[in-house]
Picture 1 (cartoon, rainbow, N blue to C red):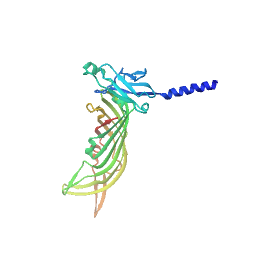
Picture 2: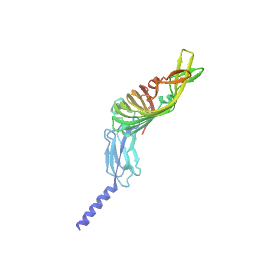
Picture 3: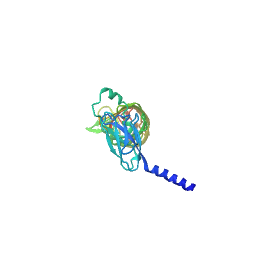
Picture 4: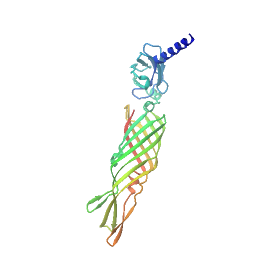
Length: 311
């Protein structure tokens, strides 16, 4: 009899856990995307209720079969939300619309923007690198309010050196392809009102193939001899930068990212000069690789502008 009673209690407990689920998520202001504190959440037809905290977060128990939540707050239009199957597996986002224009005092209270709290991933395209014949993509993962990690990857489709010669009416320029990957850690000094100022550190590495690395011999003004060679190499370095990330207007997901920084990313295994033997003479041909650290992939000072979205 005792064993049957214990089994009965166990089955009742299991049934209770099975029949009850938890709905959780965030409640935000529709216009400013600020977290709303003190929003009341009620389960339709039940006594269960909850209030959002300062980050707009909530969690409420929902009996099996009950699928609707009522969100209400003073000066905001109530929202009736229908839960979807499997809702307990992920957090939902609810946007409440103010019933009257927000005054300046109320705006000051909406300082805790939860854009970076509710969305954890950002993907963007580098605009400036497009002009360097490169496709730059950035991924960032927000770990906490002030900490993030990510990866900036650039593929150079048909890169060209900025040092160009003109001999006999022909332009002579070194061309290359390659990729550059830069894992980074980012610390946000201040992240409120959909804008975050940050410092970050990165460790870039990459592979480059010069299918036409130009060397030039010059004697006087009018006499030029040229030669080219192919080179490939791996290289790596380090860098730091400062910048800011901001939301594009009032968009829910659009982001702009701007940064200015310093990096060390050398051109490796490329000789500055090559000797070539001609009849009765040996000439030393030289190449200009200063452009690599001035405006190329290894530029000492980097300016990046990316446009993308957060989700």
